[in-house]
Length: 183
Ligand code: OFO
Image (cartoon, rainbow, N blue to C red):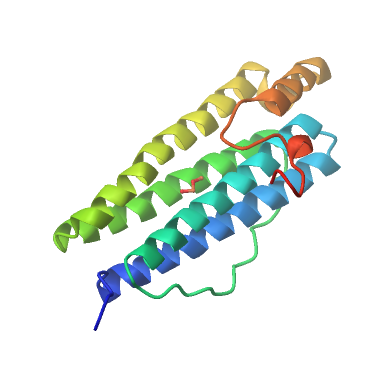
């Protein structure tokens, strides 16, 4: 008996998106390492926490593919892009990445609608909403950077922005609160 309820096309698209979420996690991780090496500890903490959120997105898709009885394909994750050249550039890259990701999600939403796969279309609405939040967050951070005077910001303005980012709320626990028992 065949229990798969995902078309070949949608299963392939969801698997590809799952790997993109893993890639996004690597991107945030690499930017976090870069920020830490530049002395932006708060920003690094924020980016590390976000890397974990992207891993959660990956798992969410993985679980959905399994629930629909289709095959999950774990493949290689592409390397993250070059390091940012400045803190402003770091958030420009984050923003661009999120906008690109939104476009990829929209493509799968469109596929699911064309196939009249209402379950997948409904599942993807969580991601549509999440992308609005993530793009807004990245845009606001970029705006704050600009307010500090962007590349020409003085150390004290950058210092407070970095400190605020370390405390910025998100859906993932602060890196220092995470333990093996409480991941
Ligand atoms: Fe940055 O968002 Fe996943 O989907």
